[in-house]
Image 1 (tube, rainbow, N blue to C red):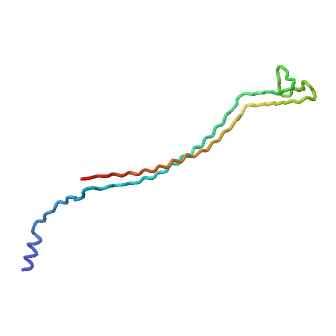
Image 2: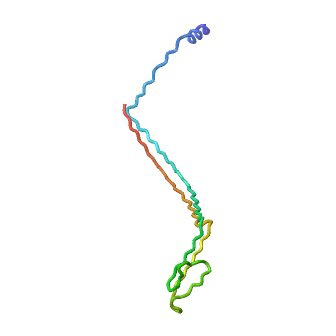
Image 3: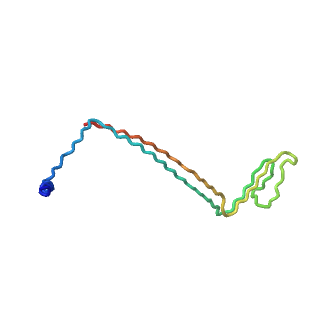
Length: 116
């Protein structure tokens, strides 16, 4: 008899009940944090492909066509003077190196409210 009862229970169909939510309001919140870090390295090398010779000064006698090795004299001997001579030959004339880091932090808070 118990076997028959077990067989009857096992052979009966099973019904599923639907689930219906019974909430009326709700909220969802989220927070997002991000960090972006960018490092830039800039290297610039400038080249000169010609020879350049310049002479400047005050109280200096500069001839019409100055050249390296020219003897320069004072206009008024013994008076104050200023003299500058620059000779640049072909090659590297200037190097620039820049390293910069940019950091961006972002924080976002989101709140969603819903009702039924």
